[in-house]
Amino acid sequence: MAKIIVTGGTGYIGSHTATELINSGYEVIIVDNLSNSNINVLDGIKKITGIKPVFFKTNLADASETKGFFNHVADADALIHFAAYKAVGESVKHPLKYYRNNLNSLLNVLENMFEKGIKNLIFSSSCTVYGQAENLPVTELSPILKADSPYGNTKQISEEIIRDSIKASTQIKAISLRYFNPIGAHESAEIGELPTGEPNNLVPYITQTAAGIREQLKIFGNDYNTPDGTAIRDYIHVTDLAKAHTAALQRLLNLENKSNYEIFNIGTGEGNSVAEVVRTFEKVTGIKLNTKVVGRRPGDIEKIWADVSLAEKELKWKAEKSLGEALLSAWIREKKYRGI
Ligand code: UDP
Image 1 (cartoon, protein in one colour):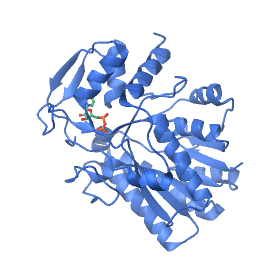
Image 2 (cartoon, rainbow, N blue to C red):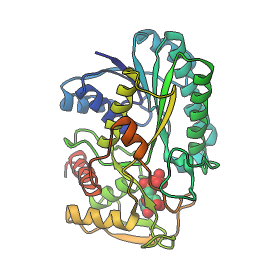
Image 3 (tube, rainbow, N blue to C red):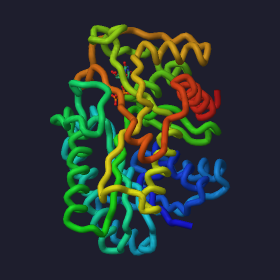
Image 4 (cartoon, rainbow, N blue to C red):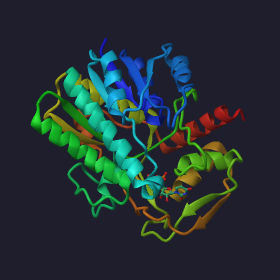
């Protein structure tokens, strides 16, 4: 049974991936500092899989803590690195916090992987690296434009750190997965997204509005150059995204990778506007949302969606769930979490 370290494994994407890995027969070790997640997530994973993963509370941005953690897991076969801050707006306000945390943790993880001989890395990257691309859909060869936020910049720099490290030594192989917009929750509703305070992201804002926690969903702009004027994204069900990690891991462990550093877009290949997301949510739940169009949100791009043909061909992976299924799962999770 291959042993996989999942950093940030109590977080949103990390917990769904840990669940998927356990269900696929991997041994999972979670390391997280619980700065934006809850230890109870481990119980959710156990309810779904029957296994409570081994857990270490460690701040990976701290070099000595990280070294201590790796002394316990030196025999791991691979590491999936999710642990990072992820709020775009917060990163604009507190850039140093973002650079310090996201870059130091990656550097510490890589150094210890080299030292312990852990050979395989999967990195959580983001479609933010493309900025507002001129040509859509974006492929992995689309230009990397200057990042709009410190958060986006940490993802660009992290990809470069990994590329340079792998160029300098063939000891490690890596795959970066550039996620589009992950939404939804595990079908059991035992785990899901857990935003603290007022959500930044669209879908948690929608489900909290439906639950009566927020009064009104603000639609940020209806004057974009899109069919209905609202911005377009590629929304992917988080369990489909989790499965992409298992596929990438199998590729590395089975020595099927074509180069020591590969990059794949992970989306559905379809773009949906904010208005379409609202309409679809209303249709699948039967709940009418209180919405109001307001001005554009600074830093937002107009439209992006993925060309996923490379992931389909090489990872033999494809997103399977529809927007409606993803939105319904987010709502079922919200209700379970709130006891509605
Ligand atoms: N959005 C919105 N109202 C909200 C939150 C988001 O209209 O309360 C829009 C946002 O402007 C963007 C889309 O929904 O066009 C997705 O935003 P989100 O923050 O979920 O993801 P992003 O693409 O910014 O990473």
